[in-house]
Image 1 (cartoon, helix red, strand yellow):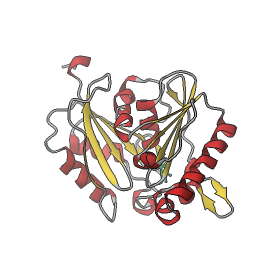
Image 2 (cartoon, rainbow, N blue to C red; image 1 turned 45 degrees about the vertical axis):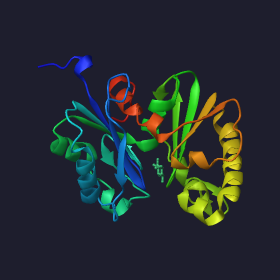
Image 3 (cartoon, helix red, strand yellow; image 1 turned 45 degrees about the horizontal axis):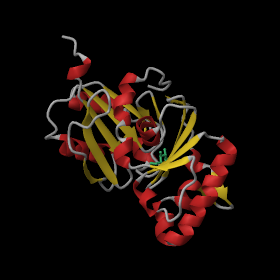
Length: 242
Ligand code: BGC
């Protein structure tokens, strides 16, 4: 039996370093279910994360497809790195296959910032989406299509720190909101010069800690806006690494 697009219900899951969020979307990205979340387990091994996902979605009813945003580098559904969950336990883990077997529906997995990018970007020109959370997520899109994923989070930004260490959640706690905001301003200036984006979107749980007015070419978004990217994971056919 084929499912018409009106019957499609896409379970969209955003695995974060601190929380795992989920909802069910229609093919246009409209939420059919309240957005829900649970804490990311510690240690965040594949088995523990999968069991939290199963707990989180157990009352979500029917869904026909599953989209997952994962906080690391993913190729063809297989996790390569998971800097904030533990690369050792995740490297080589076929998340799309394992979750597919458990949830009994087809699963697509991409980097978490890439999924947010699909949910947030307008589809016009070169757009960059960054997420401020446990780690620093980045996505680049041209006319709504994802460009190859780069782990900018792990590029050095100061003498001895990568972006994750410079503006990630731990840095925010250690440096304080004021200093962290100064760093964010510096990072935005770097991104503007390096990527020449037409528009920048700032999402992630810590985006609400920004204490300055962003430029006209920048929009502040939320994780809830980003999770809608789960719908585009199934309608956008220009996904190079699915
Ligand atoms: C990871 C990225 C991820 C970001 C946000 C970084 O540590 O390397 O892949 O997108 O955190 O979760």
